[in-house]
Length: 164
Image (cartoon, rainbow, N blue to C red; front, side, top):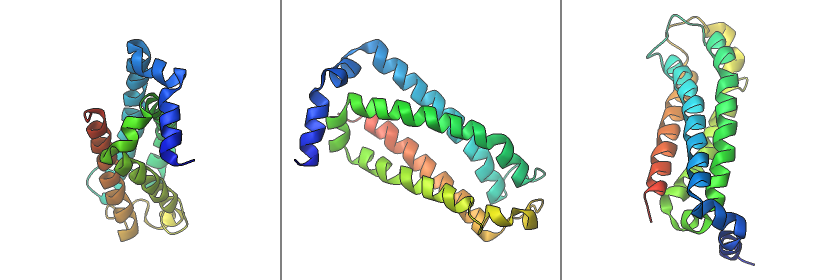
């Protein structure tokens, strides 16, 4: 069985058809997806801007991460579950659109970036530079890469939504 066969099967399941054709189901899921995105990426952006040194320079990075991390995770969980349901509603469409494939590549890269941030190489050394207005280059690169990936994910998501 090829992957396209699985995607076609999923596309034709009663559940997928119902998600796709029921205006209330799809729009409700999409609403939760956007709310989760706003909560997750909205909090991530604050940390990224602090890491880059553009904003919030008077706040300690460790405090920001501790205060915003749970919100970001909660938003990501809502976004991930609702995104999976949106994918299940239109699997064939998503499979054929380049933007969705790019989004599917950027999401794990954003996850790896977060893992690297929490590694000993960046956040593990935060006590050494926590109050500095200029963060180490690794922290700045993590913030820049995060912003690029999340803006790319959002653009690819909107591109997917408006592509037939």
